[in-house]
Length: 140
Image (cartoon, rainbow, N blue to C red):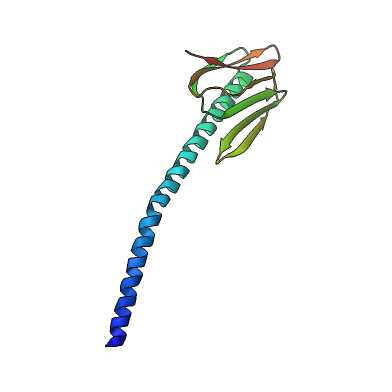
């Protein structure tokens, strides 16, 4: 009988300890999943604008006399540099600076877009003789 009471007390104490431990950890787990969700949304925003710029460059390369205009939502903490045949994107994910570098067969007019406020802009990509000119224009 004493053995049964000891087992019951041990199981009860174990359940009590697990309840206390889980009540402490559950709020932190919620914050972790929220943090991961925010980071994923930022990465999606960076990849979306990189893809839009890439599509615009491809369009101007294929249609030499055309101008590519599109409204874009510029995310925060994104720096873009155009030089020679290279486009360099710098952004921050999980407090680390990440780079994405794309190389093209065409030559760009050297320019950079650093510390631009996150809001809506007009993306203007055109060809000036043999060089491709990329400009991000403030709408408001």
